[in-house]
Image (tube, rainbow, N blue to C red; front, top):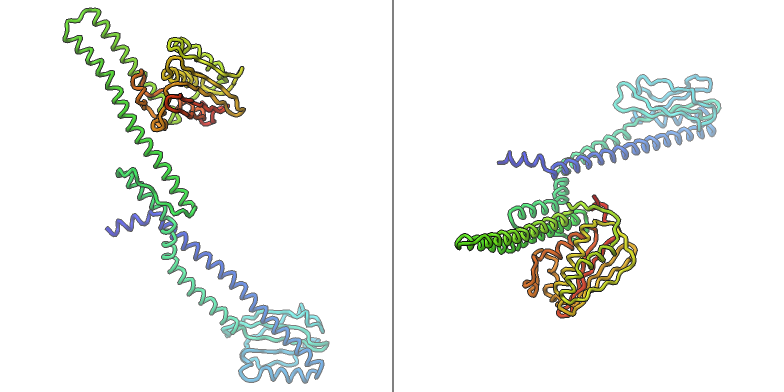
Length: 474
């Protein structure tokens, strides 16, 4: 069990993030120390050089005030006792003869200075050198320069204190780096787990939903960070999926209910024909009724498939430039006979032309369904008016009737598949006309809204863009 958990842990994002955090933390610390250490080395050397330069200038003052004898006395004073192990001095004449040295017992094999940079009487041109001598644990820093017209002096001092300071600095950093590496893992793990907490919430919620809990949602902290945005997008997706599943269940129930009636009628007619001594005419009537019921079933199934295709975004629009005024005019001519039979006045308020990019057949079905719906529920001596307004970037088509209207409770559901208002159940239909119209209009990037009051009538308003969205175009 432990090995299995360890194996799973090796492949987790949290462990990879922990390694990244610890590695970046350690690398950053090493880089920072390297920069600080380099600056400290430069600073220590600059301070040492400045001290040596001040000493050289001081001996130049001794030479001016007391001559070479004063200089020699000061050399002896500077290197008395234990100081001889830390400092050395050598005095030359201007022509290169060695005049005096301090005790060099602690400075074996001390090389002669490089005189190529020296300039007589100008201490500013002094040259510096770092010496590494055999037998000495620590190196030395020296200065060589003229202290007057007749003398050149070399001063050197041990770098023991400087190197011990830098060594202590290195050891301190190694201790700090070790602590960083030891703490980097737990700190990185804590940071990784904290950063991935939102992802873990999404994973856990997804697993609960996979087990059937469709109402589960990811908790958001309202911090407004990326994980909150992920949780919100995930919840929106879940809301959409749940709505689709509920819609599919409702559609399946309604479809089963609407399919049962024609199938039952076909079966009843067939049983009646078999149980009675039917004549040829009875059989012909049965065949005609069966064909009619099958056509109704096929129409219902095909319409349901058309709606599903349009709503899923799979509908491929056959776009062309069409005149919406012609579509409305043709629909009015087609339904004029129906309007006259019902004694309903059919009126239009249309511009001369209204050109848009659209699918001719689908938009014809949209207008036909809405107009048929308006005429169906408008009583005698009523009126149906079709208006079209050109709004530059979009067009507005309105179909207004003086029919029975829709109650406020039923109004939000009129575009649902198979939904039929109470007063519409006596009319022929399957409750798919408005759903199909809305699906086709939205496939064009538009929308349909409805305003209605009982016993006063309804107004369906279709908004269509000049051109459908690019991702809808075939």
